[in-house]
Length: 397
Image (cartoon, rainbow, N blue to C red):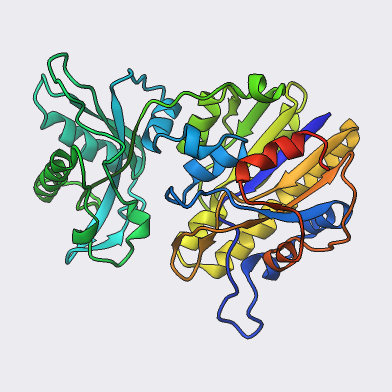
């Protein structure tokens, strides 16, 4: 039996303020997803518990069958795993965005998608500013996505951070004053001081970048996740261009497949990702394909780009993978976003997302389309999103 999970990140949305008032999923031409709905079942799942912030880290952990309320410790340690950064038991990782803050407001959470060269220069300057015996270390990543790690000295005593430390993702603050959303709780004073220092340093650098400072969020300690193969008895691989998904895959023991031309943005090579997934079925029971483009379009507030991304995912990923699975024999395929991302607010949201699955042992429920409206009519509901994966891999009844 072969299984495929396609994750169009943040694809779920709300009706738009247009004449026909439909969501991007309703507006997009997605014959392959509709075929899964027509020959299988449609439902909905909620992957983000109300106690946690909405994001791919929480949503995909749930989608893979792990309860975030039990397993989740923060976004940054997951991305640290993706970069091969080892964390000891008392270490904490912090997500470090390069951002543009102007007039006290968050103007751009990517600093204009700062290029890698400029980002490395900026992060390198922050590292140079630290003393040799500092417990802090900056790690450059890709573009605006970087990390800061705190490794306490032996004589540090009480831990600097705790689960009571709070931070806000910068993509939730677009055009908002940042003052009311600074880190708070244990260790927050140090984070705020380092953010202030980054403003001073960046102002004096001759670097071609829109970055005015760093923004810290998503901090957490090292998580411990049971390997997927032990949890479900299936070998698995993941195709993605996003660090947080790479990190989750690595922590779950999945094979992480790198694809040339996969960017994590709207210009990603959809076809290459689809073909890489098909090749991975030779050695794996489950192949997961994550596509960030739909989420990026929502963050940009670009409805046309979101619709185009959905159509390209359908044509170059969902359709070819479904055809390949049929050729393999017994199979199942599932399409599910990790969370909604709304064009109206340009940020992540909570709530159920539409799911569609078909294949061996799944009795069609006579729903002919894959979208939010159809899903709302279905009696197939996973209020705990982490229950979806065992259902998908199990009886499907």
